Length: 151
Image (tube, rainbow, N blue to C red; front, side):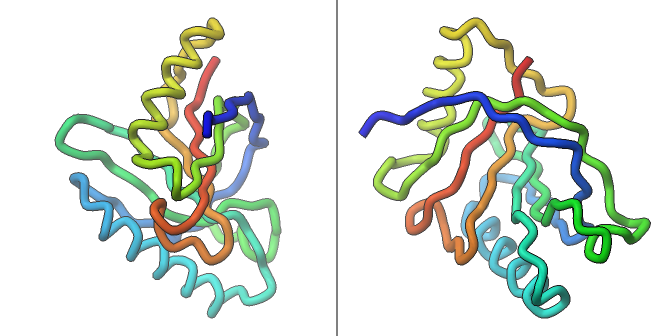
């Protein structure tokens, strides 16, 4: 199954302080932190259905840095002073499904698509954004949206 790539806009958003840094390529730890963040949000904001995202930067062969947290515009959830702002951004994006194989292979294909379409990757704020649906477990068991910022 070939991936479908498209351009998507995300408005300026507030990011929750529910975030952790991951150093190195420890995907298992990444999945555990996603589960912990989901559970924390269910306990503290049971009626809020904000989007769970991962923001990655400092990507290099031996690993990356990543923040896991929620974004949204709900004043009750995102009004605290420790929340940070994400600017409006444009992304190349595709859905990754478990049968699609390795996430990093999919990202490499997306970079090829970006170049072929005449866009440029914009790593001013981050390298990757991933959006996880409710009940996300892992990229080998759940679908997720892969996103690369462009200009």
